Image 1 (cartoon, rainbow, N blue to C red):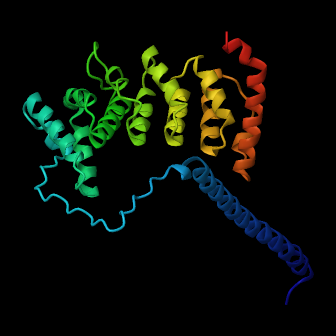
Image 2: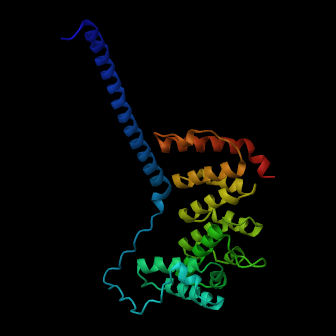
Image 3: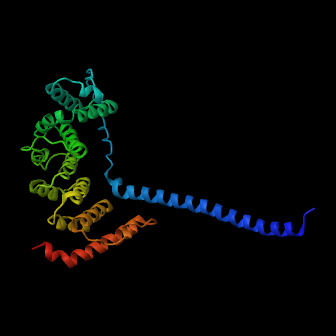
Length: 294
């Protein structure tokens, strides 16, 4: 038989258990809702910044049959330890050059293209000279992969040609009429250099006709830009493209070293917070542009 004291304890514990259970369930649900909102925020951010620049596959011209790929044997694609095992620098130079030739072929399948690119990067220092020479060529596909590989070697391993020659020195000779994806890789590569020549070309790329090139140039300016990059980034604040506006804010934050506020990281409405950030930077530029335009 339940005593009076036991009844009192039960009467107290049951409501407490219900309350604790309610708050535990609420906490789990709140956490799930927060995670869902954050995921939605990240998806929206990616759509805003990257969505415009996805490469659309080219449609086949009506009445024009697709050309048959050239059937050739693929070269050997080495694993990292196998590249390191090649006995001479000349052999590794030749391997890097072969990989560039292979990447330049339009019929190379995606899986083999990826492995060839990794083989090229695994050549490390031995890839520097073949890459440097390829920067003077006009083939768009080879130039694209050359610039991409130069940027990866520079950023991942701090590898360059020599003390007297650099990837950037040759890359700045790439013409302004190069394909947009080539100019985009050029902007990425120049973002790892702080010399005057690279910075000057990077500032020109920030006003390129292609929005993807402008975006990458502004991102690179955020990494290395000096005071001369502030007017360039400020000019990008007049763009209608959300991705360009986001990159311009990032560049100004890095170059001007000015804390504009925390609206830009708002969880619930990325586009609205971006507009607030842009408005603040526009006002900052109106107040400070005289100092940069002297």
